[in-house]
Image (cartoon, rainbow, N blue to C red; front, side, top):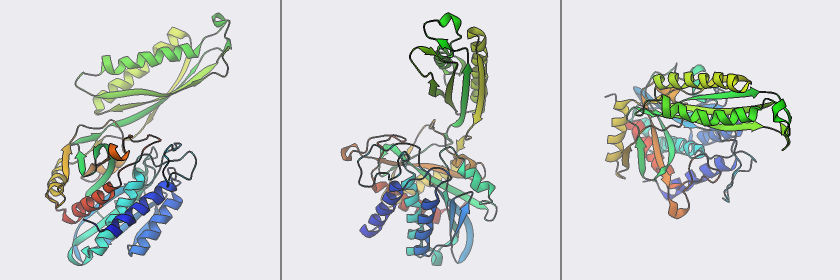
Length: 388
């Protein structure tokens, strides 16, 4: 258990990050706060890694394995609707995915390692990656490209993510595939605009787009095997300027989430075929682009078993759940392509206290007792790790 002063310190850090959120690759003040905190703790670090990233490094006297914790830093382009005392001061930007908590946990691990004098009794080195741009910017890849994995060959890497489907004190993992691969798409449908009273003189891209939204629902239901999983969603449909004008073009954007490469190929092929048919059926021109996103997040099964055993043996006795994969994507995938590791979901809800909204909600908030859970869990995982 952490003492009350330590818990209050964690809450203060989390609330500072929440009050001053920054978007991907713009986390300059966030990174500065992390650097200042590490300096106060006497923890050495490298800055500006992969853009705005910070890498803290704590070495024991005795040589041994190198392992790491990833904590992401960026916020979302979202107007906050909470009434918290520490609500966002930056209009249109919000920590609605728990990254404020992840950073506080990462700094808490650094403090725990220093105060427990792990450097005097442990072995090896522990790195903490404060990573920029998880929300669509592939900050993990940017840090890897900057050489963060080149100097110290890692044996294991861990990451936590707040998980509002479970209460604090519960953790969850997927045994293998943890998070879906993501492909985004953009589609501009051009027709012939004109007066709304004379649709016969136009080629209406709005009608074509509406039909396509409906047809896309058949990609998963009729082209993906029933025992496989995929999600195809349109998140943006924009067009038109007035009630009596048929627009010249409309813009659509959406996302595809898949749990296997075979399903991904099938879904992308069907998507392209439907758009080709749309052009012929409605006499429109479709400019279609696929924007590849993050790959599959695949946990290492031996690391998952180590996490389960360690969590259950802690004095706090955290409840461990093995869950199905999430269709959300995560750029922690890039680290797991290079290093065995696991993405661990940290329960954080408590409806009795008002914490009942999901990730990416403008009302999202979480039970701050999860900060202590994260610090204790990851400190023990990092210090007790040994190769199976």
